[in-house]
Length: 120
Image (cartoon, rainbow, N blue to C red):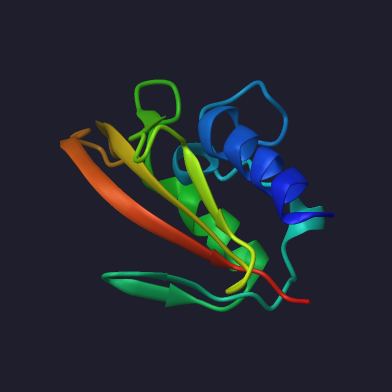
């Protein structure tokens, strides 16, 4: 896939999940397996996961996908920024919602900067 085509797939997964029937993959875990290597590394401020299946599983149990939301924070007029030289795709998203814990705590809106590093 070209970086542009890959960015379109990532944009779709981020907002409605790979199936298009759920919330974005950060909330639902509904991620396209075919665009990620199984041994890719997912890093956030509190966690690092180096397996696609484990990452998906962790996402599925964290947020209540029905009562949570992900949206893009447009920067420079675009949802995703493609850098052909560095082979990266960047975005900023805003997430909020309820955790799937017995007392259903609400997580207020927070922003996440995402950098996808693309193999040759």
